[in-house]
Image 1 (cartoon, rainbow, N blue to C red):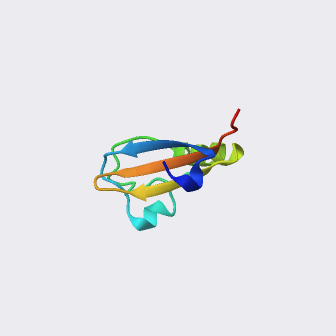
Image 2: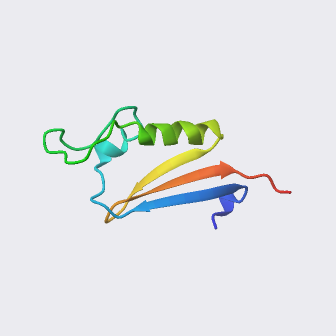
Length: 84
């Protein structure tokens, strides 16, 4: 447990796919952004999923960070926690 975040709840989502580049990492929360080449894409989508996640985390006064991994990436979301 990180002593700097003892008043926060951490939710981490780990992906073991191909990963993303540093350039893509800076853009993945932009509305309608989809990484890769549109000409060779085999999946459908609009590129709003991660933008919605980002806005929902901020609406809860949380923070989100992305860490590139080998393979894939990890997304860490921190939410404030009230001690009862």
